[in-house]
Image (tube, rainbow, N blue to C red):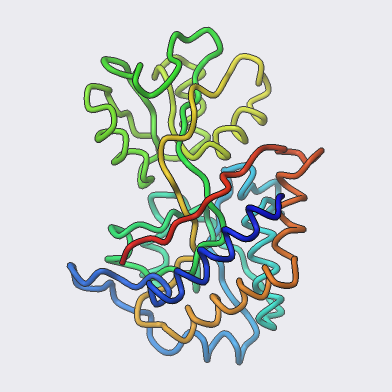
Length: 285
């Protein structure tokens, strides 16, 4: 990780706190029902937290046997430790179910490569950003597709509940968007030729390619074409809980625990060595 990335991310987090109040809802739709009681008080008293995470999304969250691993998993554990929480229970979520599970009270927070968007703020609240990526395309190596501009008349796969399904209809309206239940099915669809390309955040696509068993047969097509700031999702009307998470995230940055985790997953010689976007912009409220 570079110092430039560090300065910009820290600035983005601070700006988000000032401008967004922790990324509250935009007020255009009734808020989702908040779980009963004060989550902050309950969690801090019990020293136990339930965190929704991905189980099929390398390098952010993968489950093998009974164990989870990934960048989001390490961030979740570090965040809980920073908050003085001893017992962390990971609960699997998908892009399609994570907001529902949060609103239903099945989890206390979601750390699952979840982009902060105004649409999602209608139901859930968000912390300050803790990561940023951007969407790209993954295709077969022999594919003629070079950028999203080549998708006209072709089919592109996306995971149900992701931002991809909405963005793709805007940037390439002539493409046919095919939805898949999860990332495992998404990759299988590309490999089977059911779609001409798949789209998601580039780091996720690189993770899928690396873990496909035949990475030489797949390639990234073109540069990132969106900006995707990730936040920790929490139920609405739980400002003490959200603010405590914001403070802990900033502390992870200041004590450089965030940097250590990022280097572990994305730094030189790391399993998913890659360049991370070096800019982060506040999400408008």
